Image 1 (tube, rainbow, N blue to C red):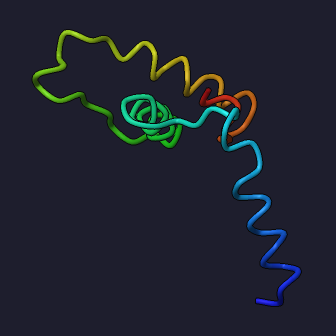
Image 2: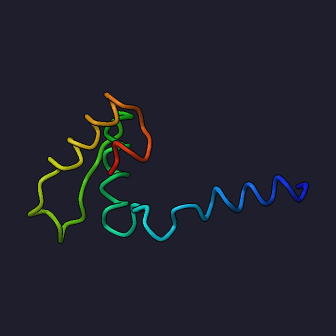
Length: 75
C-alpha cells in the first residue's frame, strides 16, 4: 500500500476512536441478531437467557430494514 493510502486508512480507522461508540460485547450480539432476522435467518437466545424477549432484536431489524444494515441503525 502506498504511504499516502496507508495514512488515510490509519486516519479512517482511528478517527473518533475516543468518542465514537462502537457495538461491543452484548450490544454487538443484539446487532447480529437483528441482522440475522433481517436476512430471514432463525434467531434463538441461549437457554440461560430465555427470560429475555427478542423484541430489541426485532426493533434493530426494523431500523435496518428502513435505513440499511449499517452502523447507525444498529446503534
